[in-house]
Image 1 (cartoon, rainbow, N blue to C red):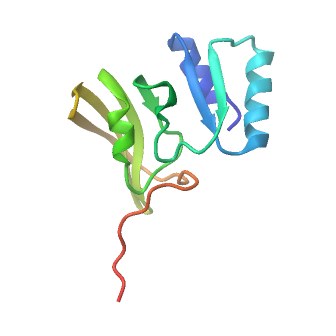
Image 2 (spheres, helix red, strand yellow):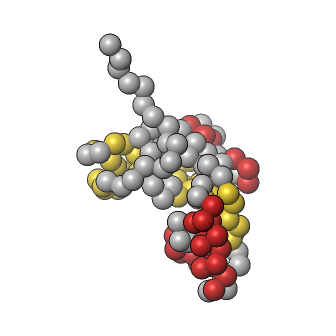
Image 3 (cartoon, rainbow, N blue to C red):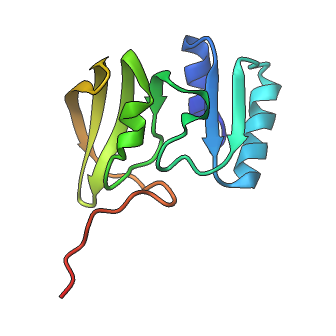
Amino acid sequence: GSGYMTALLAEKGAHVYSVEIVPELKTMAENNLKTYDITNVTIEQGDAAQGWPKHGPYDVIVLTASTPVLPDAFLKSLNPGGRLFAIVGEDPAMEASLITCLAPGEYTTKKLFETSTIPLINALQPARFTF
C-alpha cells in the first residue's frame, strides 16, 4: 500500500521488511517513507500471501489484508515469543487474531475482534465442496 502501516511499525521496530505485490504501490511506499526520513525499512517486490521466509524468522508479522485460510508458513516464520496479527476468514465472518509463538510448533491464539476486509491477492483458499 502507501507505506503507512510500514511507517507505524518502523516507529516501534528495529527494522521492518515490507512486501508489496503491486509495483506502483511499492514505489509509492518507498517515496512516502523517504519523504519522512524513515530509513529502517526494506520494501521488497513480491507475493507474500503465503509467507515470506527470506528474512525470517520474525519477531512480528502483520498481514494488512485478510486471508480465508492462514498458511502454516506464517506460523513457522515466527521466533519463539514472536507475534502474528492476521485477519482470517471470509465475508461475512472474519476474525482478527493475535497469534503468539511459545516455542517451535506451539502457539496461542487470542481472538481480538470481528471485521471484514479485502483479501490478500493470491491468498490461500479453503478446500471447496464440488459436486
